[in-house]
Image (tube, rainbow over all chains, first blue to last red; front, side):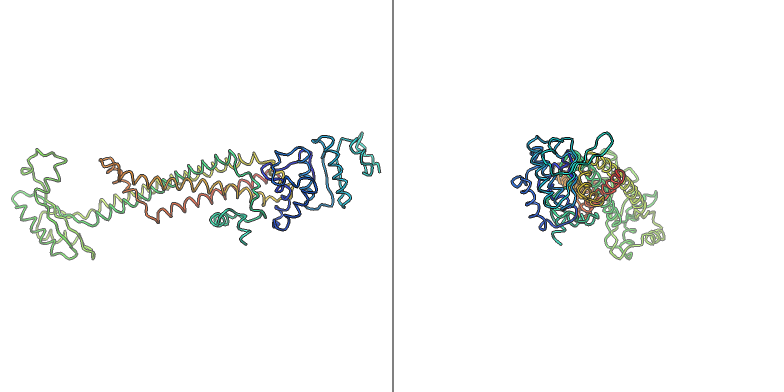
Length: 138
Length: 325
């Protein structure tokens, strides 16, 4: 799950935030170190692994939150307004990231008010809530 | 195994104490401290625990010193029996003293007999009556000090023997003083235990409040932990580790400060003060000297306080998590 307000632990490094779901499972760090590093590189934060969340921009924080959600390799990713706190160019990058993730086999459900952003990705299936009804656009 | 233990703390002492406090190694990464290491609430808690441990250790330390002194006084008193020869009109007191001393010397269980002369008795009374008093005119009793041998002396039998010789004597084995001393020491021990119990109760309450305060500021952390899949047990374990570290820090600081204070107080009374005040303090508390065994006991007490902090905070955290649900 990815939240609009990121929900990162500010006193932990980016690397530790992303590794947190594996740490609470009691897994040995040696087993997941390479995996976390690779994922952080994939979301474009390979050079900021030791940085703390308060030093990152909104877009970077959101990418950390996405990486944390992905580290457990979920079949389904729920993103609640993931682009709500980032600028338009970063929002487009994030959406591209979700599209790439979808191509690699993860189902992605994004809740957003930004319909124009979603229009840029016509291949995405849309479920629009309006006037108490759910409209499905394939 | 070592990696697993390293998750409990930085060194073997922390590992051992953490295991004793019931903390299990759950985190796979020693460097990850889910609860922020330093916070204002954390620092305040360390100071509260340090002060409370200082008071508890000082109470226990003073109780040990009083008990040691009382035992020392008791031994000193027990090592001497006194025969008091009363002056009786028409009798030669010098003859009575010599006769009593001769009987005492030949009595089984007597190691040494020391007869106080009339001058010795006058000198002992001088501080109370002044030097200008004519001691020759006063009917001052005379004293014979007897040191019992290691096999023991039956003071009642000696008194009987002296009475049979028709001597006007009183045998004092200081039993009355020893009994009073024992009841005074027991009373002080009860008071010390009571103070200790109150200090520890106050500390438990302070820890409970501080833990609740610290928990209130960590709601976001708990939410994130739940969100990334951590169970209540994992979260309470992390909190317990955090508070255990704070407790250990505070308890060792307070305990060490109290032990250093007692040792320094002994050094100061021995070195700087030589007046009657210091003598009074020394006569009550002894020479402020704690043996290694007592220092070890006080250190153990500090460690027990740290364990108590860990246990109390775990209980509070677990209840808090249940309330959140």
